Length: 195
Image 1 (cartoon, rainbow, N blue to C red):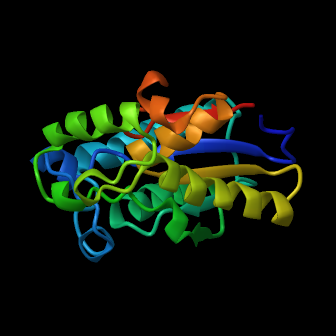
Image 2 (image 1 turned 90 degrees about the horizontal axis):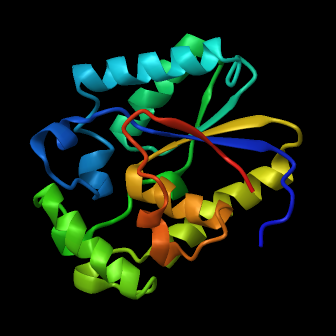
C-alpha cells in the first residue's frame, strides 16, 4: 500500500496523435521522439482539457511538468506550459511509451492481444512487449524521485495511455495486470492520482 505522498500528482494522456489517426502502435523511441506528433484535433483536445482544469482551479502556473520525451507528449506538455504560464518542462525517459516489441508499427487492434497477456501475467514479455510490471517499476521510480525532490507541489505527468493506466493501478491498490480495469484514460484527459 502506498503511503501518504508529499505532493499531489496529476496525469494527462497526450492528445490525439498522428499515430492514433493512422491506427498504428508507435512505441520505439527512434520514431516516437522525432515524429508522429499531435494531430490538429489532438492539439485542440489538450487546449480544451487544460482550459477546463485551469477554470476549475485544479492546475495553475505553479504546477511542475514532467513529460515523456516522445514528440506527442512534448507537444502536449508545451500546450499545457503555454496555457498555464509555466516556465519549463522537465523531460523524463521513464515516462516514455510502453514498448510493444514485435507489435511496434502494427495495427492498434493488436493492443487487445497484449492486454490479454497482461491480464494473465504482469511479467510477460510476449513478442518482446514491455511487461506491465516493468512499466510500473520505471514510472513509480519517477514518483519516488519527485517525492525526494519536492514537497507540497502539484506535479503533472504527461505520458501515454498504457503507461498511465499501469501507474494508476498502483494508486488504486490493484496489481499492474489489472490496468484495463481502471476507467479508460481518453486522449488529453487529466486525472488526479489519489491514494
